[in-house]
Structures are given as C-alpha cells and as structure tokens.
Image (tube, rainbow, N blue to C red):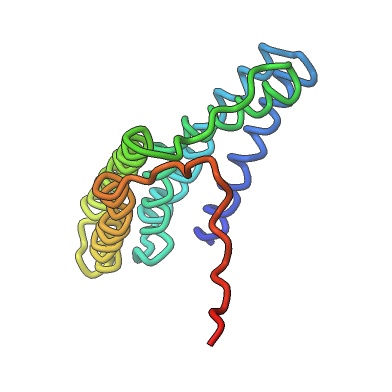
Length: 191
C-alpha cells in the first residue's frame, strides 16, 4: 500500500505544481497560483504521515518504508529546483519571460554546476538517512526495522556513484568544439 502512496505523492507533486503554474500564468490568477505552489511541499507531508502511521500501526518496515525515506530526502533537496525549473518554462511560454536557463556545458562552470547538484544529492542522502534512523528509533524493535538499515548503504552507494560526475568534470573538463562541425568519418585508405 505504501508504494501506491509514494506513486500517488509523485503524481500529486506534478499535478499541484502544474495547477499552480497554470493558475499563475495562463489563467493570470497569481494568488491562487501562489497558494497552490505553497501546497507542493504538503504532498511530502502526506507521505511522511502515511509512513509514520503505518509503522506506528505495527507494520514491519520493508522496502516501501526505505523508499519513502529516500523519496522524501530527494524531494526536499531537489524539490525547490524542480519548481524553479518548471516556473521558468511556464513564464517563458505563457508570460513572455526570458528563455529558461540551461546548465553550463563546458569548463569550470560545468564542474561547478555538477558539484552543486552533488551537494543537493548529499543533502538528500543525509535527510533520507536521518528519516531512516528516526523510523528505526520510532519502532524500537530491530527485528521490525532490519530492512531499513540496508537503505542507508543503498543511499550511500547512490551518492558514491553520483560523485563520479563532478569528479570527472573537474579532472577532465569538457571543452567547446572549435566552431567547426564534428570531424568527418575516416575514409577507407586505398591499399
């Protein structure tokens, strides 16, 4: 059941976000749009309440409880950026706003961007792990929470893999092409 609630919360996030932006820009109802956008984090509170209620009701923690903690961590860390990303596109499309910003493609700017994104992932991992530890403490029974301890390692593995992007962009920064088209394919040499 909890996996269904997680899916519903993800869908709810995008529905509330789209409704808020639609009210704000095409419908020009700025207050209504702002109120709806303030409701976006409430979707996360629904998931948190459902997870806590399930555990307090005597459920044995499983995959879905760990997934809920991970989802909440990433939603908190990346949610504001996702709202800003969508807002820029709606403003450009419906209100004549400037074109949306793109992520940097080259050099130090790209490395900096990747490190900022990695920092968000580190915050998400920290929040997810804190929620996992809070769930373990809430239940207070190691037999019922054994599945949650494995989630801390999963989140750590995701963060370790994520670190490859900023590291590679720092050590081997991408460079713009010389303005020329990509090199032509090699021709077969006559024998």
